[in-house]
Length: 210
Image (cartoon, rainbow, N blue to C red; front, side, top):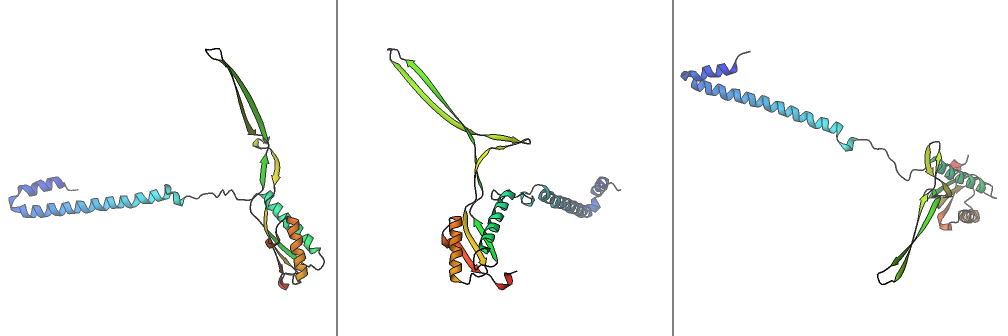
């Protein structure tokens, strides 16, 4: 590999080659700038790629922990309600096959047990003139009662409220008859304690009858 510094010194000492030297120096500087530019450009191209793979929160997968997610017990309850209503309607006079869908507006509500505590503090004070003053302070609070089930701590539930029904859709064989349709509507309305406008009874197509 040639000595670039030595070459430049030789060219500068030769007065006859001043013009050539200047040209060569300019060319060498240009080549060095191009090399430097290519190097830093390549480095910049790599850095964003690494950043996108490791630090970009948009690309990270997140787990959906929606509070509206129903557990297996709640899903079973809703399925059982539909099965029971289907069986009940299919035993009505004039009703054939039935399909039911029930909608709810919330999840099962659980009420935990609480430990209630109360304290009373009585303070007697005597001022400089001999007067007496008694101060009574009452305070109360409560804490949730918890149980330990196989190493898992959870609230002790004393009451559960089932999800509130907001609507019922029924497809029934025989619902073409207006009187039968009305009887089904009234029966479901009273059974679930909802208004009749929240019960929709439809005749079943022959293709749905099995």
